[in-house]
Image (cartoon, rainbow, N blue to C red; front, top):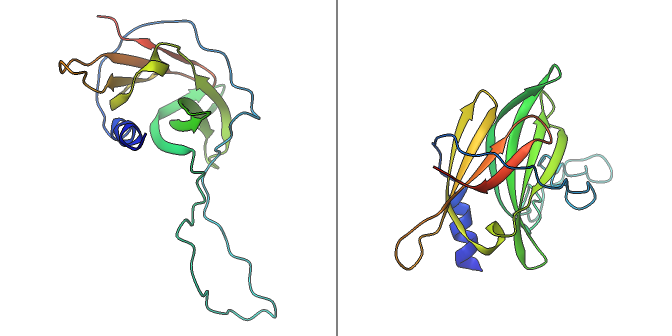
Length: 174
């Protein structure tokens, strides 16, 4: 699991690419299923009495990111209905499996506008190792390469992210 998470993290830290495919969008994830929301630092409450006492032991995790979130990657900008912002891909471990979500955040406050789970039964069986992104006229295209198999072969999957709620995902075709 540690190796798999490391490989997925490396997959989420690279960039570049070319256009690919079209497929019906996956089912929308109910809002109560996941809401990583924008990450904001914790603000400690002032000590009683109003004086600024020294903090004895500062927290190592000032962002308070849930442990089930193993990767976050900014995908690209979006614009729709006079609004704009950016999208991000969030990798989450849940029920012993890896799940990917796309979130659309609005400008200027970074509030989550929409969240959608990227669902594909075949993709759930593979481990992704590299990611490349390419902005385009219709949104951003994210290319995901699987970790090489025993013969050194990789497969490429494509995620096309458009305006809030619009994401398509599936194997790349040439």
